[in-house]
Length: 365
Image (cartoon, rainbow, N blue to C red; front, side):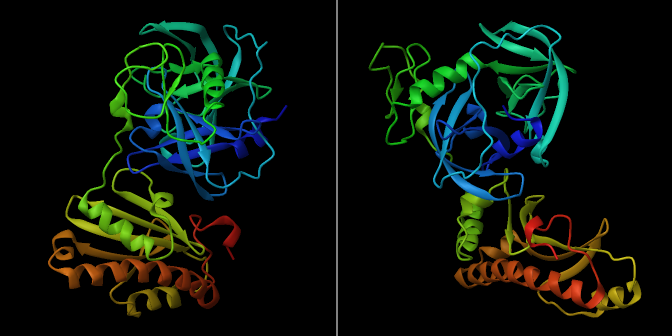
């Protein structure tokens, strides 16, 4: 049995180019469970642990009807804590429970509540209703007891009322895990909601029981021209762009210690920016003089909310003038990442600026 503190290491942030969510790890089966709506439209996603390390995971099973998906990482997860299913668990009204996950894409969070109804009936299905806060981003994360025993999968699809959270019961997870055990090649598959058989191709009807299938689930989201351009620049840094996706037209990743953020502003500008350092308590005059006078063109140094940023901005229309313009902007995207990783060390050494709190924890100085 694991404590809530250790289970945070088995709870992951799930990232796509549409949104972020949460998921949790079963060591015995070597799979991660999340919501279907978190990964809908994707066959490969990124998962991030509490230390901001990311790896790619393949979506190997989805069941849109019950909103469950199963992922398998491309590289082994070398962690000890794990979730498991206790078939003898009895969930009762007013039992204390905890929702684990990454609400709104924030760092790992635990919220506490009680079970309001262990079998709340909605839309022809039963859910565990709780007053523990379950927000967007918590979707796909675990709901557990005080002892860390799994109660269900959090879902933020029902978020129109205060103090009302819902989780998909454990029995649905059991059905997904039992079905995925037949998927020995770890292919993308659609689970039949009627008989739980897996379809590996976009079929109209289940080959096993004849139930209608949602074959459109095999269609993957397509990136637009701008997103494709940005991801090609990221690829040239030797980074798989899937690992950098963090929501709609937003990318973030670490180049060395520095966090790099790329986003579109008001449909007009492409921004590439990095919070490299925090403002120190001393040597402020020397630091401000440097920030104002230092020429880092085409990049700009600035301060926002006690953080020093290095940034690059370009109008989107200027990117696609011609191939030369595209090559130039792509080079600046790469160069800013490299400059940020160099600059944060310089500001530590010269002015005593602490590394930004957004810097990668294990590489901070």
